[in-house]
Amino acid sequence: MIRLVATDLDGTLLQPGGVLSDRTRAALDAVDADVVVVTARPPRFVQDLALTGTAICSNGAMIYDLTNREVTHAQTVPFDVVRKVAEALASVIPDVGIAVETGLEVLSEPGFRGFGPKNPHRTLELLDHVFEEAHQVVQMLAWAPERESDHMMEIAREAVGQHVTVTHSGGTGLLEISPPGVSKAATLESLCRARGIGSEEVIAFGDMPNDLSVLGWAGTAYAMGNAHPLVKQACRNHAPPNTEDGVAQVLEKLFNL
Image (cartoon, rainbow, N blue to C red; front, top):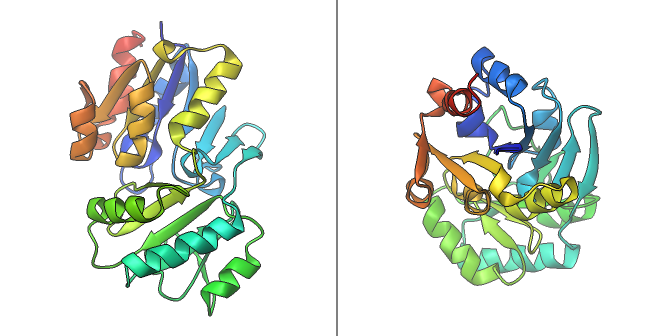
């Protein structure tokens, strides 16, 4: 029996351009189960999707109440760790640019240009200014223009993995760095425990390496047809791609919609 649907957003639930299709929305509304969005995105990117329920944001660092539009929980990276990680990454990835997600906005040094127009961020003159102005850090972002994300992730994990959690969601040369022990799965597991839901009662959907923890924890896991090779390899079940409303197609069959 499925009591909770956990789904990533970009490349999974949403079509290109961040569109939530009518078919997918109808399927989410019709399922007899809790629906939890589990994304690398901060709350400001999910609040306008007109969804209700709960969103796990920033790769598990934040829990956002979609119905009441409020953050109910946030885990932060201590500032001494933020500085230590930034220095360590600069030593092993010389062309790296650093930014921090505060939960309200992204602040970056000039060398960080990993976001396009749809992902606005505020650039400050020096990295020290970023650290001084940020009231908290729920996620660090590291960007290197010439790096392949999988290899860059390996380098970063070796250099700073003892201090933080490092992953990526497919952006070229872009890493997502969370507080130690924080992951999508850890926060989802805590949320499910509070609701009396076991992992065997959870179905999860994802497409990128930052989804692997959730896909490994959930009793039923689907890699999207457009998923990263590591994700396809990790999952026995494969859904159609997000461009074909793959999540909706699976839910329609499982719940006889």
